[in-house]
Image (cartoon, rainbow, N blue to C red; front, side, top):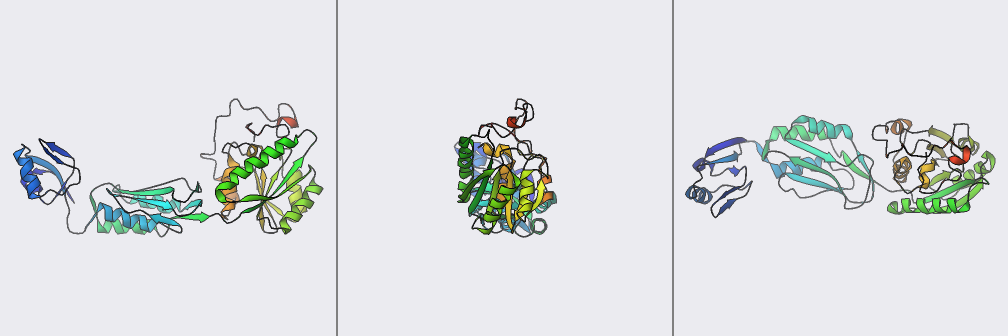
Amino acid sequence: MKFGQVPIEEAVGALAAHSVRAGETIVKKGTLVTAEIAGRLKEAGVETLIAARFEPGDIAEDDAAFRLARALAGDDVAVEDPFTGRSNLYAETAGVLVIDVDAVHGLNAVDEAMTAATLPAYKPVVAGEMVGTVKIIPYAIPEVLLQKGIARAGDGALRIAPYRRHAIGVVSTVLPGLKPSVVDKTLAVLGRRLEPAQARITQDHRVPHEAAPLAEELALLARGDAELIVIFGASAIADRRDVIPSAIEMAGGRVEHFGMPVDPGNLLLVGSIGGKPVIGAPGCARSPKENGFDWILHRLLANVPVTRADIMSLGVGGLLMEIVSRPQPRAGGESAGWTDVDPGEKVE
């Protein structure tokens, strides 16, 4: 594509690179300059124009953006018709946005003329939400460059993992210092978290904060219709040998990972029993504010695997809020952690 300032007579057949106002004549950016337009501008005293002229093999910005967006769009992602060199991508269903990050980086590294931007990977989205956009910077790019971009973008780098798990079993452990109202509020908060996934709590069990009774309830849940099990402990998990991880193993399950570099959310546990995922919720999961529990919960609701490597990669960006004034869980003993926590309090 040729680009630059030319005499007004030579601009015929090219695109006006910028909007021009001359007397009563207004030429908008990107307008194809006709002989009539050039004549009117000339009469208004315009001698030169910054113009863009296509060359053989050039692909117009809209066509290029649309083709790139289609290459990026995977399952349950729709591509919008292009405009001004841009084509947006939208979720066709509620779920979790899964991205081939290397493919997007690769596309953006090809040339400054082609850009792709997305929402963060694994973000929960709703149907109709924009998840990405492709923008071609100049008015056209060479076909050979577009093909290179498409090759680097791969096939379906953006897809939506729809929510698959809808029946949630919950076990809450209790201690003498834990008020029943705290558990009730915790379940209400969890219920609201599940709404975007059209999931609901189908079983609610409360047992003493001891490994044996907890293991018994977990085994029952694993044999039932629950597709995901969440454990709210009356006391924070302090070690892999603590009550909750011990109960998971006693129930025939396994602890996949304990701890995560997200704050709030450090004391989260992920495991499984009978092939069903189990989350040992951190104390911050009692609060409606976003925390590490949300990130893992939605992935599992969408049946997106969560590995130890996945969890430990969350550190950059994992500091979710200011914590200078946060009460210290250990300052007043065990009850300063989860036991007497208010559902709105910020804890690990």
